Length: 623
Image 1: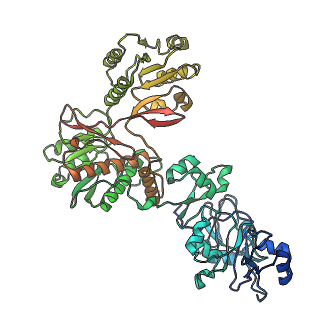
Image 2: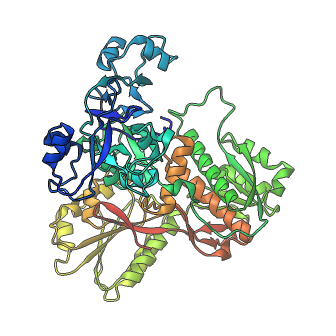
Image 3: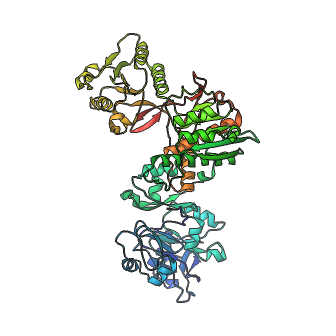
């Protein structure tokens, strides 16, 4: 649903009031010796009604206290108008005297008219597209129905404006927008705010501002994911939307207090004045197909997300002063098309080509641009690019061997005499040289007390783990292997061991085979592993990107959206500074770390690898 700026989400039951054009109440200054009883008698009202109008006033009055009292000159017919909101549902919102209602299943025109006490003419006038028909899921406008009643409701109270107070100060004090203050008090738009004016304000301070938007809850969303997406706390969400306390349900419309973060840049790096970069994106859109199936075509979704993230990076850098000339090419995921495109002489003018996505297509482009001086970024393939002989080739995703080596270096650097237990799979599917790894690990334990465990017939008995664990010290268990059954077996057996056993499990590769393993088990064994991606939603840069992406594209950013941003932003930033990207050190963006090194084939590798661990069911970055 498109973001809608609203004044405030009102209470879902009850009524609210707006002041009529003539004042029904005026102020009264207390004189010496006066009491609630004497003033009530003087004004011909009961003490109860006087205190009801002035709930903040003590029974013991002081000289010059200002009270709110009925205006004896008020003309009948100008009573306060109230609006009945007793029918409002949890999904409804109110903006500018209209209820915005999402049509639910089985809801009929008759039931809606009856529920909201409106008529077909008013409904069609507010919604010209209706033509008397309702469609499930569409949002329609329903005029609020006014009723005649007395004074103030349970959600608002009368307030006397103090000297030097402004609309802004009153709105801010009560946690509302100026627009909402004016909606409660329409006369303020005409006459402005005067000292001792009597106005309506919320009875309790609420979280609101002039920057609010509506969010439609999607499937599987939680308070945690919403908090990360918009960069606000779960407590703020609950205060703004009390109905969330009963659960986050798909289809609900909730209020999101917006922050100024949208107006900031995600990163603010130093760009040389007058810098200009020419860039080409080579991505497999397959745009020549008769139709594009975003629902079922995973590659199309990855490609589009990567592209949209890249556009935000280019826009952000442009605002910081970098001139970016961009051209996009559709490789159609074809080696032939990739090769033919890159034979065009215009590719010699580009500072960098991001793409193609797959290794065979990267190789075709690389061969054509080998002598051009144009950098070629391979964005998504973790396969070793060593077979491509091009010193301008940049492999962005670290290989499995790089990951394993980084994990090994971390273990070496932090080893302090823990019990080492090495578990090695018989079936090496990762491409990592296990024999070399085993020898390296053995060299860590100078006392040669390391225990080596291998599965028999693909299985390791629980008793083997129990006998290997040292109950008196910390146990570091190093897992070499990525076979699904092997991994599940090891982690399950370790996870059911008594909690007094001090266990830390290190994997040298975390593939998809870990995705279906219970996080409680991973948390129990203090699971450590290397990764090329790490996202911390609490960082201001990540909050800013989420907010910008959501507002720009009306959807969540995926991992590939963030990778598109990271890779485009980082390489353009480096090229704006120097053509030598290897010598510029380490940088960390939203999801990705960049630490460029030279490969043995003279190409360039990104060795930006995070070591992370499970702690309290969350991931924590260790380097």
